[in-house]
Each structure stands twice: as structure tokens, then as C-alpha cells.
Length: 265
Image (cartoon, rainbow, N blue to C red; front, side, top):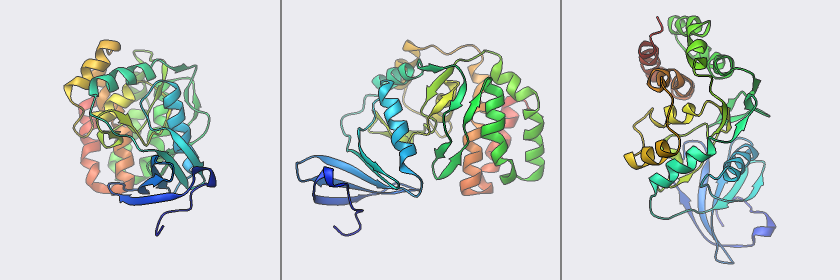
């Protein structure tokens, strides 16, 4: 069918397709297979195995994600997910995902966040991981004075603040904003790694946030430690830097506000 990539033979033939909108990075279609199954077909500019691996890791940890049916270098086929919103159950499920721990922060290989490379590797300390793998790669996208200010914070106060509560290395979605929640109940487009669990929550509140039912489900299962509100703007720096890299200087004021909120001169 016109425009649709060739699917692996084991999925069978396609009887109907329709393009899906909303994606900034990849092309996607909703397709019905000959056996009646409805799937999402995603054509990616990056290695689709990164996304497939992330979805499978989240699924193994109990997250509600679409089932991966096939993956090739630039092609991902998943079940099409629907259903009424269940934000409370989603919050509880995410809290469960965050109980899956590693001995170090990072991931066994680099992957992607959106269309950008995401550096991982392993680090024994959370603050060092954030500075070296999430902040340093994007300093060159900032105006010089802002980059100097962020570098100075990274030389001491920033990692100290992040390490003060000695967080365990939790499995995280890694790119958790409301646009990556389908129907108020399903998670998509992960950038998985092991991090402070507050990483997911900080990003989820960067541009608006989920309804109160989500927080009820999450906090009932996993209350947040003291100091969360002080750490949140620091944890929002990394996704803001990604936005500066992708979309330009219009996001620099948000980086400055996060530095101000964190108390970094």
C-alpha cells in the first residue's frame, strides 16, 4: 500500500492503513492485518531496536506499553493500544517500574532521546552521571554565559544536590512527558536507563503534567523523599537542554529559570 514500508512476512498482509499524525521525528501508520489485528507501524530515522528494547524492558517491569511485534533497523511494528484513561493505574504502574534497580546508573549501551543520541554507559554516582552524560553533551548548544553558569554548577553544587538523598538506580522511561502517554494509560517512545526515579516525574511536570489521579496512584505506592521540590528544577535541566538542541534558543530562558530555581548562581 502506498507509503507504507514493507512489513516482515510473518505479520501477513495489510488490508487497510491510515497515517497517524502528531509525530515530530518518525512517520507512523495505523494498519489492519489480514488476520484482523490492528497495529501501529513506525518508520524511524534512528535504529528502531533502541525503542523496541526500551518497550520490552518497561513491559518486563510491569509498565503498560504496546507489545512489540516486529523490529528492523528503521521499522517498528507494535500493537495498536486503546481504552479509557486510567491515570491512577498508570501512576501505580510507574511506581512499580521504579522499584526495578541496578547497581549503577546508566544503561548497557547508548540509545536515543527523540532523534538525538543519548549517552549512557555506567556511573557509580547519580550526580556525576547527570553532569557527564546528560548536561555536558549539550553545553555547546547554549550561549557562552549560560554554559559557563551551568558548568560551574556541575563542578560542585549540582551533583551534591542530586546525591544528597542517595537515590537507588531505578529503571526509568527516560522521555516521560504527557505526549508519550497514549489515552491516559499507555507509555510509548521510551529512552530507558537506570536513574533517580525523580527523573521521570520531573520531566512529566516540565510542560504541564498529568491529572491528580496519576499522583494519587504513584504517591500511594511510592511516596517521594524530602527535597524533591528542590531537586526537580535540576532534573529538568537535561530535557530542557535537549529542547535547546532540537528547537533552538527559545528554550534558553527556561534553562536560566531552572538554574535560578535551583539556586545556582
